[in-house]
Image (cartoon, rainbow, N blue to C red; front, top):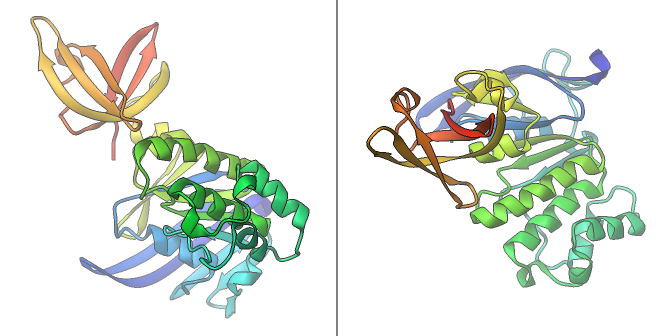
Length: 296
């Protein structure tokens, strides 16, 4: 139904490191999805989030959320950011250094609700840090405070701009759970910018691929990144770091996003399209491990 759709058709001329980029994003999303916006640096991912948040104005176009128009260049409609009910989490978290954890979370609330702020702190394991300021928190704790703060105003949209890019692999994996928790907490529609394929497969209901300012693909991670359909159960994504030839087979070494080392046996026909450095999926079928290259 149209009331359950987010329609986006916007254009914006940008100056990028490689020259002029003509951003033209035309797509639709469903309410309640966790969508990963995927693409190389400079593709226009962050600009798309800023346009949705009302922080960057498109040159022309339309944004319709359900039956409400947020932006329409022809009708001169451009809702202010505070009227869009957006929760935006920036890469650097943007916490107020002079405020405690509780104050940072409460500040974001439109209608002050101490019980809800306390509920969020409990949900993200922050209660014991309620009176600490950001300088006394670890990177993971700051990330949880930033997530809780974006939820404090009960947003319809949760926008996350590469929130885990500065963290080590173990912390990234732990905090991916927090993002899933944040998404599920109020069934918020979530858009997350990432270029990490392990993160895509872990989090996304849907992926929006952007290349040079345009949408080049939309669908599930399997639909967009697998070379062929796999009936077996996908277990893990990682980087193929070594291909060793033995007498009648090859031994492949894969490093996962959590720095686990996986060894997979393969034969000549299995490795014809594989090279060291490829992003791959390791999965099982009839209890045997298989490996497939992921398309970028």
